[in-house]
Image 1 (tube, rainbow, N blue to C red):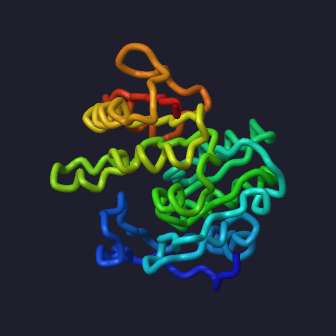
Image 2: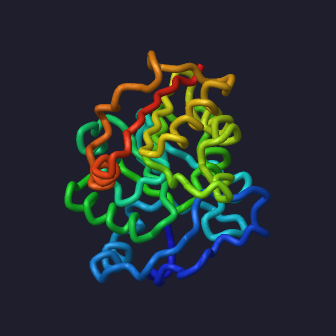
Length: 250
């Protein structure tokens, strides 16, 4: 990816609604990156960050820009995609434990991606790539249909206020897009510490024609491939139950 040296993150929403016909699940607000994050981005982002052709918005994906995964990773291997990877704790652990698989971290916050790059360099990972894009657009336009073996959505923004819940990532359209990206038999794994969002996710995916439950009872068992993060521990400490869901692409 060829890009100018990292710039400070925007302080306000840089994704005007006029650029898209539906709301996104994020608002790009953040402070400046730390000096170590800036340095990691400048020195190593071409090694990890995919050069995704853009539409009008800063994190959009242009039409007709399907990526060549074999070229990106230098091999054919099962692909695991994490939506909203944050600082990369889950996907870095998985990429280290499973060198036989390819991993793709999707995140719109550059500071989180830079932190992921720092840890990837320390671990000398060659099977991890990053994408600074709106995840639904990447899944629908940027990845070949049926190319994803597992799709992870761990602790997405709950948009707790009722008036904001239209921004929640997991809805029927996201289920459709996920089914498009996943291979038949591929897995969609989700987790949240917001009960009403967990119930919404379950309702949406139970109704999605391309998915079937991979759990019995109300909730799935905790996915053992998901490392316990400080974020999850904080939610549990506040008394919020951690809910996992698992669905298979039929």
